[in-house]
Length: 262
Ligand code: SF4
View 1 (cartoon, helix red, strand yellow):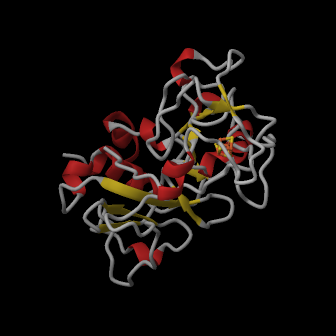
View 2 (cartoon, rainbow, N blue to C red):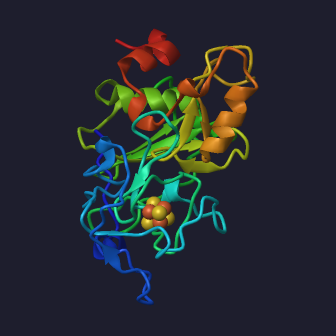
């Protein structure tokens, strides 16, 4: 459902793995030890992984920590966790990849408009109603979110619970049939708008734990480590309760906004 378009830069670098200074030679590798589900998986930009044309981690100076706020989970080449171990992979670098890692081939993941402009969040209009619950989204500056469709239709939300419900049951709430092409939610710690398509969501179920609008919402985090820290503090939650946006389906929409579903 989420048609995220890759950047031109991503396309030009995929399969090369270079950082522009010639020190990251692609490798036809026999040491690429990733679980089978990653071998030919696609990254955030939609590029498919070619296991016969990967750079070694050393060649791109891969590290397990972020660099200046940039990390693999926000990179066009990143393949999100598929087996629940908290690690992902990369379409151009061999081996398992920590979402909090970084390398010199990093390319920020942004969806694009048809004419090549990067999709980005916009200021919430004062009169914009939440597309799911119809509360005024601008009244909740620490909780609100938004989405944009491929035809530039925008939708605004009061909270992450409405944003993820919109993603899961788009047909009921959207004013267009065009695909959702970008979605943003607020990091529970920083309250900054973050890329909801690359965020980690702790599946909070206690309506009293957070003093949030709509009473219960998944807790979004830009960094998986922050989501882990959150569930570690909550007796009823474990790391199994941390999901990515693609996990939101009708069942989770029922959990968070069942009273609003048809
Ligand atoms: S930053 Fe991470 S995801 Fe991006 S190319 Fe480097 S290893 Fe791959």
